[in-house]
Image (cartoon, rainbow, N blue to C red; front, top):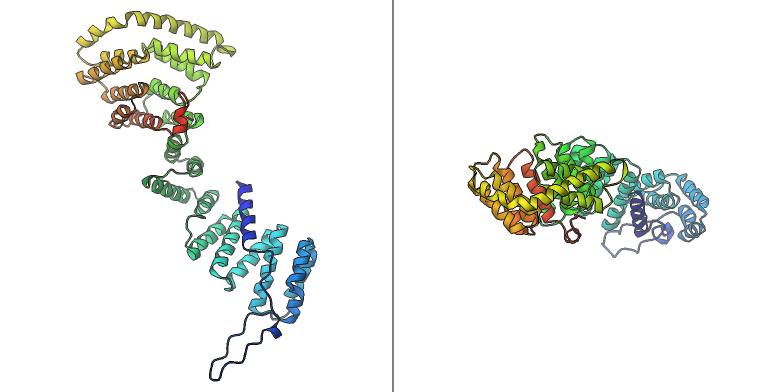
Length: 438
């Protein structure tokens, strides 16, 4: 970021021509023409006195600058500064040269003092005034004087009407100045406005919002940032962070441990060894051995499981899953009759999801739908979540989103539904990667 800022400032200084003095003329060369009879006298043009011109002769100053004879240029500045009763225009010219020398020799304090004097001289046209204000604001920003950076960037906005180009710097200045409340306010305002206009917030805005939440220990703001990073710029790290934070959210129910891992397994390229083995164990405990077998096979195929100190444990768990999955394939059909006769739809929903894990999506979705319709469910929203991501796994995006959008709850179920929608609507580049969100 630092190199970007410095490069921007260098380009700005070059654009406003700080290595060149304004065109100068001797006082005796600027005699106004005699006014016509009865006409008011014309105001004299800005000029410098001969003794000032002699020291600030543009040709001589340029030669010294080109030769990098900065000591000579500084000597000329000092000699002019010692001349009594400098006129406002002579001070303006002198400070222009100070800025030129300071920017070339990286003398930020001199540059800032001289820039402010030039700005307040009233002798710049509107375009140059804005450029000089922006240069001064950039100097303060790079010097980490964020209070003054905000002051001058804001003045730039006011005087030029260009609000957008320096706004990111103002917001970052609030952040670096530890004014996290104001940084959060401004970031959320910009992000919301872009979303309402159908535009995508920048990754820099979202990362800064996440940092703002983290620095101020504002977990709600951090989650907003992470949700949007996953939504627009999905990556393994963002998904893992978001799903990990979800499980620490107030009111979250740990009954969703397997549901969280199911989404993570879809959204990231590679999970951690612990996540693969945990998902396998929990799936086995919940009577979904085929799901356990698949996730453990994936962990072994990726070289994540079967190595290190837990290699034997991983192999034992995989053997259990393989045996249970083979038995389940043989016996699954026998459970349908009893599930249909049950007083509630729980058995149908579990049986339907077992078929989903076997890639028999139409069969599985039909049974889950029948289970929901049968009713008597302790947690109907959980069943709708199961149906929603079953549609997603079956490649039925529209049906999945329609179902997931109906889910309500404060214990994590609605968060998971929303996150599945993020995964379903992930950017095209992310969707192109198999079972990944990056």
